Length: 376
Image (cartoon, rainbow, N blue to C red; front, side, top):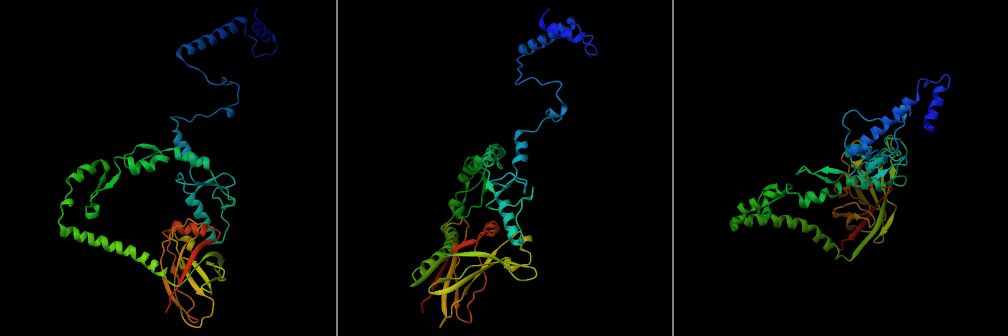
């Protein structure tokens, strides 16, 4: 009798045992059945990976398999890697709070801007821990994982990794929307890229008369002159004898009203031997700018020095050397005197509300001011 059979016999003989009726023959039959099943699985090419599951393991330790067909891997990753604010997959940078909750760059900046307007500490929408540019960090692993997830091209409806989708839609997709090469002379056609050669071979605009083309070229020249007017004005200002510029830092403050309002002000600075101050406000000091989706900044230039005669100046604000905010240069003019030492509030020429949120989310707003004194 083998050692296995001896152990089984010993178990069978034990008083009070539940296996009292188990004999040597039954054990041998069970061993043979297991061997036959293993041989059958080997013949069918079935291989088990890892250790066999323990039948006595408690149910709570077993992995629960969902009923029906399990979801795709990318669908499960979508719910794991999505932004906790907008519940969408991030398109650019990904930030995380100290507890690891993810936020896309747009939502993160928007939360910081809202907290600045409300004079509150920004918090994570999931765990309510404090968030700021110093406390939060980027999650590069999530950014790379999201860039490799498949997404659908809006034109051809094929699946591509997110990292290559933009290049595909701009350069490779045969169904991407494109325009006729004769658009500049008035052709309004738009259609899929694969239909472009057929259209251009039949387009009637190349056969337009000279009179028709001159009208189109006149409109193009008018738009070009409007664009060049700003640059010509700047070049003219650069010919002035007295030109000054400085880096200015707008710092946030609150009014003393019952319902406080956010405003910005720079420390005093000296340009062209005069002392100046810049002030800025959000949405022209409306009551609750945090409830508005559209946000703007406006500023005014204040002369703090006393002058003997009127000081006629031109000035403009540009982005600072270390900021990435996009500002379109706009030239403003004002004649400063002791009675008129403040300009009206003029819009800060930023492109959209997203750029405004970037400025509001920053600790301070750093810009560059140019002042040109007009010689009489």
